[in-house]
Length: 202
Image 1 (cartoon, rainbow, N blue to C red):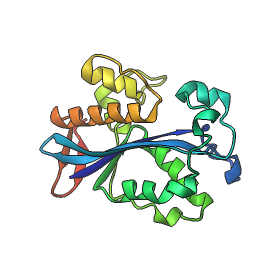
Image 2: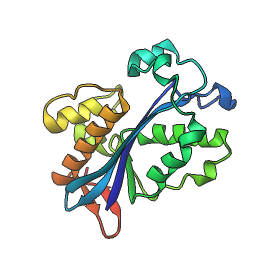
Image 3: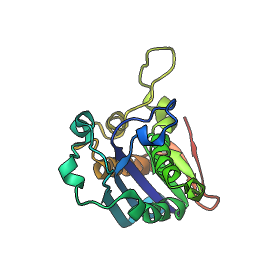
Image 4: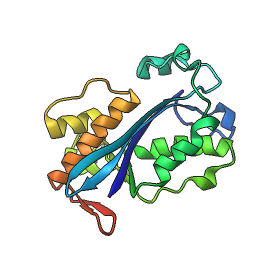
């Protein structure tokens, strides 16, 4: 089963009420690991780590989180130069995986919408390590329900320690992949490889 774990870093947060695409954030880093998952064993085939020039200054507050500054992306390609490559990583595997993957998908869709290419976004199957492990992590929220676990919290639940380097896309991808494989191997989630289905036992 071919899987692709990916993450993005951006210039800011999506504003669901904003209709002007120019005022929405842009992707400045796209990172992922492609490989084959068979019987709980993962064989890495390729990893990608692309910096992208958003054609606009990166807000300092965002740079403080992901440590990507204007100077880092000054000579990086524009999104239109790499979008076809990104789509291949997303559309070709049997499953794409991410932690809060809905946000990363929305960011890619925003970039596609700016180019009138949103129709090209066609992942075969999507799995979120955040939403699927709410009950497994069982972290207290503000209300009666458990809260969504942060990637570091899920990692600590599984491995009894946090990981170093959060908010760098490739580091987050490595941690997400590590968590996903452990969730499969400890039967928290089950992958039906022939039918290309996945389910959570919690």
